[in-house]
Image (cartoon, rainbow, N blue to C red; front, side, top):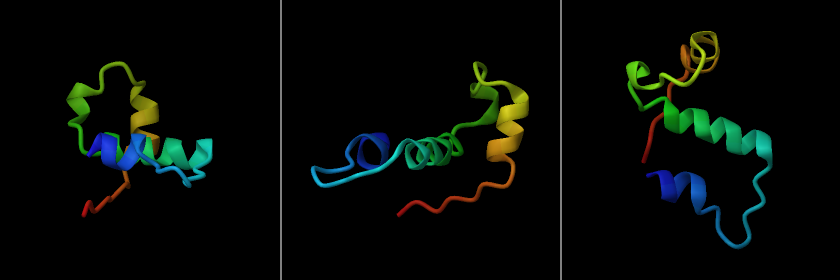
Length: 56
């Protein structure tokens, strides 16, 4: 999923940094919070608390 959604934006893809960061948070939302030990708890709360992502 990481490669498909984040790394491979395709030859014609033109994703900016903000889109890339939002996509990164989407991907991190599937990781248990207990595993996100190197990310500040306030940032986790801000970015992941209300995030609902449905993967195809």
